[in-house]
Length: 248
Image (cartoon, rainbow, N blue to C red):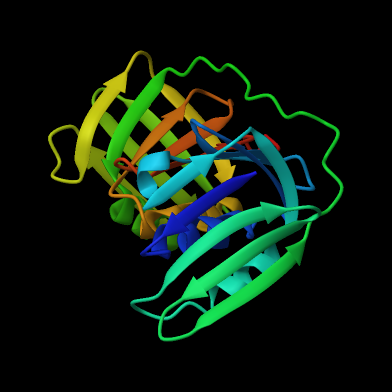
């Protein structure tokens, strides 16, 4: 059983909204270390990893570790009923997630729990040759730029330079980000690397920029991409995306 309270549910709203872009039902682990989720999208192309820290909550009380599976659409609909200045409290009773919204009135929603997912998702250990941390809004803009001309975007890193390329000779966009740019926090390129990824998935992932100031971009040649969005002392949302193999 647990009691989780938020005076400002924005971080919960944004993270749940982003997760729902990938999965319809979500299994959460609630422990003293935070609220956690690891899930694969139905196509097994991407993985989403979420941790909401206890410090993100006004009240965080976990009597014993819990595992709950809920439908995200029902959860989001309840979250949309929260108005400015209202608080939200999540509690767990037999077969239900209870949502209490407190303001000038008190509203209570109950969402039935679903059968727990039997498969435990493990986060793969990956070795990346390129590690870049940059402004998350800038990254989202880059993805939006690429989406105008193509369904895929190429990432290439070499000699203190990140290049994003999308499109062909007809409609194309090239974006360069050099070490020392104001948009960069850090850049480490152990060896030159290039890979191609789905713009559709990247657009969904980049929505995490709504709550995170920066994003860590990690990749290698023809290798999965990992994105880490972090809101200090509140949440971290990570994504792992399989590379898109183009016919040569």
